[in-house]
Image (cartoon, rainbow, N blue to C red; front, side, top):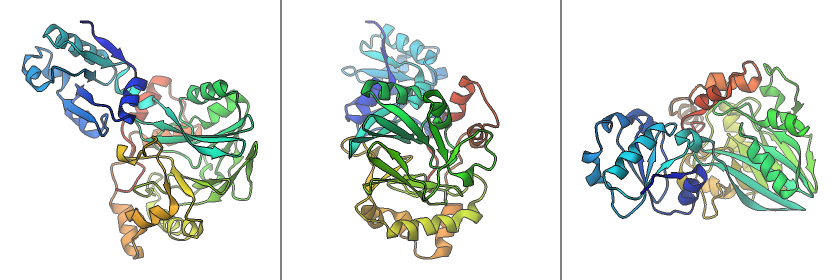
Length: 373
């Protein structure tokens, strides 16, 4: 039998469709413990590559004989070696993840959220990183919100649907991933919007994403709503009084962290005001669409990460902290590690540094860490 190659898109399909998936991850224990492929029907085994160089015989009893084994490593080279060793040892159904976890980190799955006048709203799920970006389309025009650096995903999608991307928007200056907003806008000759409160050190031109300055895409109105807390400029976007894109302020199962610019103590009250006052005044029927998710369980039956605002005020624990002092403690002390290379990512998104593509990939490796635990 030959070693089969699996693309990130194939693996994502299995995860999203909750199909059985047996993974042998041969990265070191620290990398595996920090970040791995997860899902409701995923069984994952970690045996470091260096433990398998001299042979896979001790591993064989741990592997099922009647199911495909997907071998995963950081870039693919180690998984190809281990996969071939398994086949030589008599395991017939073996594959490897093409491009390894780097490819997994970069794959985007577009999922339709719902209809809009003259068009629809799509969520692009970056399943390996927990990032969520959006495309609003109406009457042949489109806007992209919180784009990743893999901008070909949006241009290809738009081309296939006959759309012209007129605008790109970042809800805030990102610290966990490199934005593709400016690059995409430049490529399609569109307008790039960024909250001016976050843009004090930005080195390139932009249009202010500002409350009161609505953006029209076909028949759809995108309304910026100033909602600071994750950053001082964080701005939510309401689409036709139906959808609320909350950036990194409010998630399905948690709330945003205020510390990624070193301003946690300064911004904690802004965060509380946005969550406990500004959002609470909005219609409970609004569908909340965040910029990140932390767990596969947050994906709904259709693969969309979303929840009605009223449901979050019932179930999201981050919205139930009555005492201000306790809220402050929660969002300044109860935090996961900061994202990998987040300072360099911020500087890249400001245009201060221009790392090459391989360095950009390395900077983004790892899980989403924009939420309070």
